[in-house]
Image (cartoon, rainbow, N blue to C red; front, top):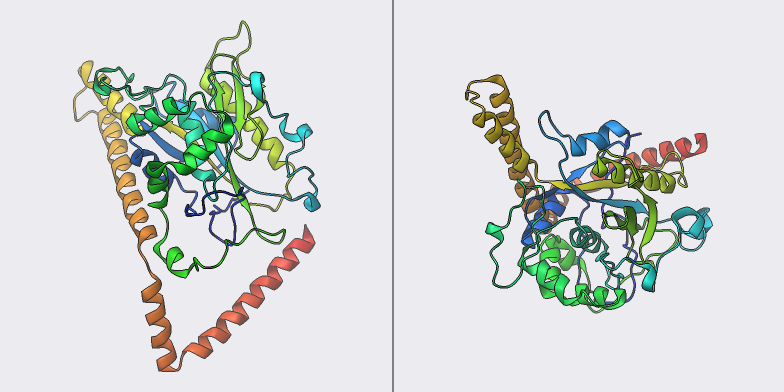
Length: 388
């Protein structure tokens, strides 16, 4: 079924605990998330949307093109509509029989980074950090070392960068709640996050009034992350609103060989499908993104491998790869333009447009027309729901 990409600021209030109130809402979009990650200094990764959960779509993540196998998939980030208990679920939409038991204390693997969410509107960035800090075989910066001399395996290894490397090292022995506090208190992380806020949001908000808390009538969305753990061969759901990580399944079977990346993604897929089964068939407000290897890295690797075996520049294989690489650069350019538009404050233009319409005498007729159109759409939506 078709899915509509929800945003954390569209008719919605993000689920949160009491904490800092100076984090903005950001849109669930691969261009936004990729740019946010790169602003932290992270390299060799990008976000890719998944529109289907079939095996073929999952295989395209690890084998994205001919000649490229085992491309890295570091984690999944899932945005879903929160369901309250009156909608058919209990215990905050996550009974143990649905998602499994949260692990705490010594039950949590030592090398698994989990932080509780204690900051308003931080769940998007917290889900991103959950994947970054648990990426297998990532390159962590240490003082006095040069990242450039470390082999990144042609982009398959994620380069964490000095900002997040230092943060991970600093919080490595913190309990989950203090890690959450550290994320909310980090000026570097908060500044990067807020750089993707909308200027008109700050203009329209009233700092003298308390933040509005979501009610049962609101559309409320939340981000969670799914990551593999190579040491125990299990996949974990990381939800900052839970007491700890949730083990959703094992992907390493004794005596079995194969694409371990594809296997862990399939385990995560099954957990997501289980969550989706508790929603109405007509619900479409979900978004699933995979944090994958930067496509430009393996396209460049492919070009170099073709050149190494003497393939001419005019050869169709070489031209195809160059065309795809050019498309990737164009995609990055589009993302940059879209992000600039997201940051631009359109409010003064809208105010002047309304004044102009009012001055020309067209405002009232356009309002009446819009009300009529909205009423017709509402009737069609209600009729559609009755058919369900």
